[in-house]
Length: 168
Image 1 (cartoon, rainbow, N blue to C red):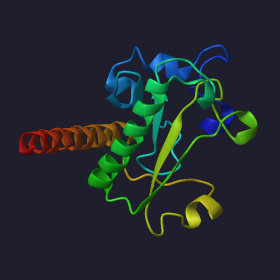
Image 2 (image 1 turned 60 degrees about the vertical axis):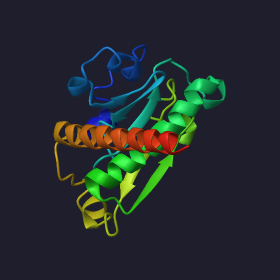
Image 3 (image 1 turned 135 degrees about the horizontal axis):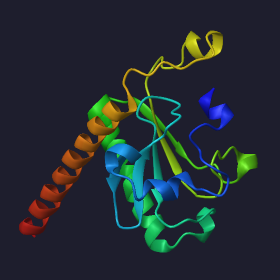
Image 4 (image 1 turned 45 degrees about the vertical axis):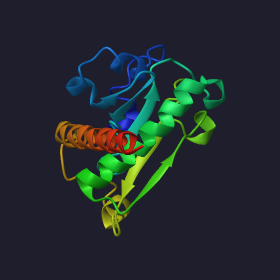
């Protein structure tokens, strides 16, 4: 109901994604920060661990993003998949963007890509009959768990790259 009423979204002239940039990781629910994009938990998740990959620059359309932003966004989606598999054992994922209000974007003025973990049987009677979703952990706990998994995956990738470079 908070999502439908627009609670926590601020005024129409405020962008929540731009506001998050200046918050601490804990307060903004930021999982990881890159040079041009960051990963943040969705305040209104479809499933536990629902992440958004967002460019720092306020841009509404994927077609208007810079090449560097697009490349880092793709790498962040890949890292999000790895971190979510490690932290939660996700069986699959929905990833994608809703560009424009008519396409379902809740915040159409700032492009962002969704990464939604899925598990067999994760859709049950609660959303249909009870009109509610059940999430097994608080967002702050989920952010901490995913940030740790993200850092571990990044460290593993760095050590693998170093070992491969030394082998050559």
